[in-house]
Image (cartoon, rainbow, N blue to C red; front, side):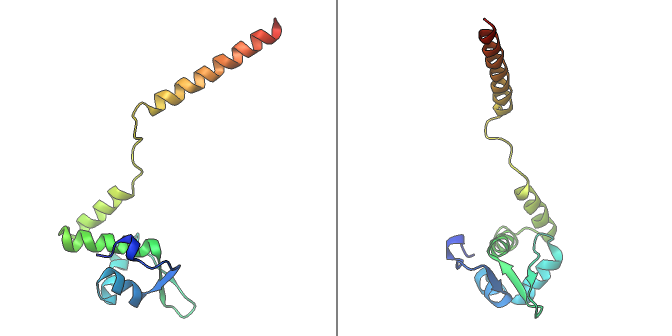
Length: 118
């Protein structure tokens, strides 16, 4: 599998370049386009597939899950959905802290109003 630092810094990759980086044949990439909704390369005016860098990274992850982790197509779909979900806050009490901050700011404003009247 190609690591992110081994992927050239380009805006777009044609299907041949992407297949070499990912390590599969071009027909496999075309098949994955049909199987995975997340893989949607743009098309040039000549109808050539143009993969963005993030597409190539995603394709590398699909290859890793299918070939190295031995997931099924359906299992890979589920795993990619899990990975694309936003992660929960690092600190579960983060929402409590935000609420406390809001209350403290309200109290500060109230104190400011009281001192202005005096």
